[in-house]
Amino acid sequence: MEVFGGRAHAAGRAPCALTIGNFDGVHRGHQALLARVRAAADRLGLESAVMTFEPHPREFFARKMGDLSKAPPRIANLRDKLQALENNGVDRVIVEHFSEPFAAQSPQSFVEQVLVEGLHVKWLMVGDDFCYGAKRAGNVAMLMEAGRQHGFEVEVLPTVRNGDTRISSSAVRAALAEGDFQHAQALLGHPYAISGHVIHGAKLGRDIGYPTLNLKVPHRPALAGIFIVQVHGLGDRPLPAVASLGVRPTVEDAGRVLLEVHIFDFAQNCYGKVVRVEFLQKIRDEEKFIDLPTLVKAIDRDADQARAFFATRNSN
Image (tube, rainbow, N blue to C red; front, side, top):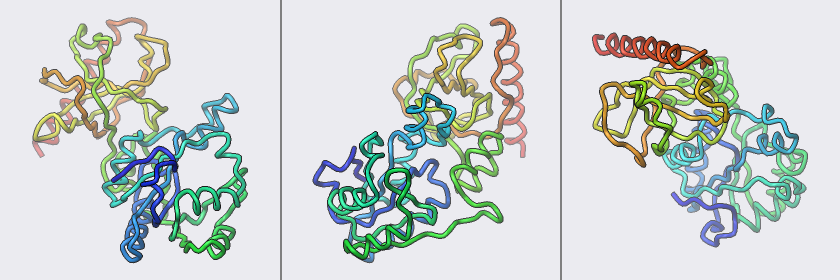
């Protein structure tokens, strides 16, 4: 799969079957859409392509208003999104920088400048709630008419449901916020995980008897707290661990989000390696403790609960 930062590169402008969206989480609804794009691309002899955005448009407008609480928390980082798109057979991804000029385009300009001249779209699939152009003025009916004028076909994917629940990124975020990983997996079609490079931290965990692997989380995640997890990528089987995902209120006040993972009975140097942290169960919310000894006692309890979880799972 090829990834392009915008539409300037000539190789990213070959005729394509395209879909457009944020694709946060690449859930089962997204997967159904991508399967249709892949099938259309094969039928028409085109490359399958996805246009997605960075930052998320709602995050862009939240920053513009000075209120990041209006931005949706992220299900997946860009690495995990791109990997999921590749896993679903996408040939090309255009990561469009969502900016003031891009947001200000009229629906007509979006079609002519982005879809027709920029990407040479021949077939396009969107969800039934797709809107485009400044102030979301363009809708599916307008897009179909534009397709007839400019020579590209438009198909609309109806809502995909899990029972009575509409499968959406919002539904996945809600499940993750509640620590309901079974429901999140039903919506995603796979267990929830975060991947990334292991980075250097403050080494505090080593000093208190709980050395950790640290992963930077560049955006506000859809979940926070203390979790039972397993770590993929450091051996031939996933390794049992306990993790903290949040802003570490007891030891710093910078507000940066970090994923800290303590793998049980493990002492390898992992800096720079790419790991995938799979979430299994939530233990508790993140707390600010009065001092470091109180924090350590809480971590002891968390680790005991996680070890008991794995002991029970292994015995079964």
